[in-house]
Length: 143
Image 1 (cartoon, helix red, strand yellow):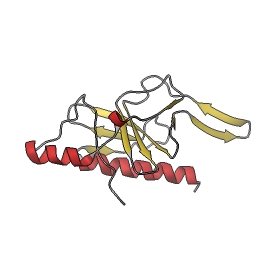
Image 2: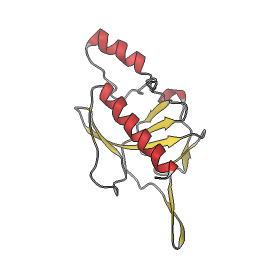
Image 3: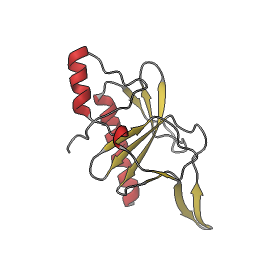
């Protein structure tokens, strides 16, 4: 298995763990051809989630692979996914609640950072977690 595939697998596994900790139901598509990697049931809507891993400051949004004719670059199509989950090499997790179809890359900001400790406190206080339209904030669990 190539290193890039393994990093992607780690990011998907971490995303599943994170959304599950938040109390959401998570499903994986049966096909590799889907433009999204996960389905997250928020009870209001099923969100299609594209998952990315990046050790760089900017996260590449295009898919690039090679074949016998050379490199193939695939840009994200409009409305291909609902949320973009990013796992950084330092364990930081980010969630951007929109499809970035018109962009080549994105630099996650602190407003996108997921901090699980804040959500755990909210759950203890209210008995539920509502990320609604607000930004989701949580720390990456240490492995």
